[in-house]
Length: 204
Image (cartoon, rainbow, N blue to C red; front, side, top):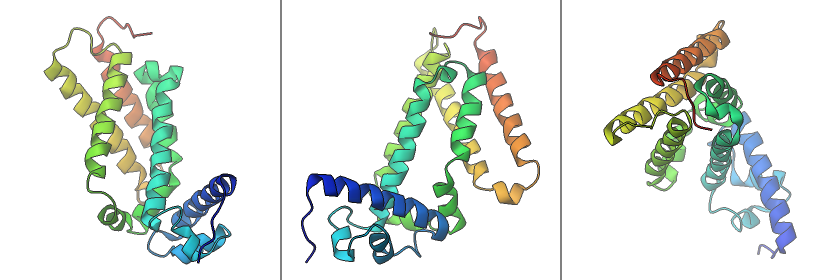
């Protein structure tokens, strides 16, 4: 029977499980990383694992939520106030997300989606839309535009960010010139959105 842990122990074990999950999911993928392996690496028994997460997929999703918080943190940076400084920061963040690339590399993404709440994709898209709308507001691209125009720009910006993300999943296949190509895509996106603000004024 799994023993009880006090609050301090629970927090320490939870952090160890997150570290183990990130390490093994990245190196081996979701399918090959067993609960027993993850629990053992974190210093607890397999039964105790379920005191923290209902399954390994939930642990993986917790890691994704932490990555989402990093994206939200971009809005706190001064670089988010202009397209030409935002896109390089976004590209850097995308490049640091080894976990997502690993799940695609190991063909585990579909497995994860089948195991999680069906509302996740909807919530993720809603979050992306809110993120894009906040950027448009900061860039002064919401001023004087109709709701329909703002929606169109938000959809376009979300699509650009998703294109950059999915392109990053195929870095190895692209091979030489990948970094330069991604920088070129970012520069083009920054130029396009920057040109939409005819007065060149951005919200402070």
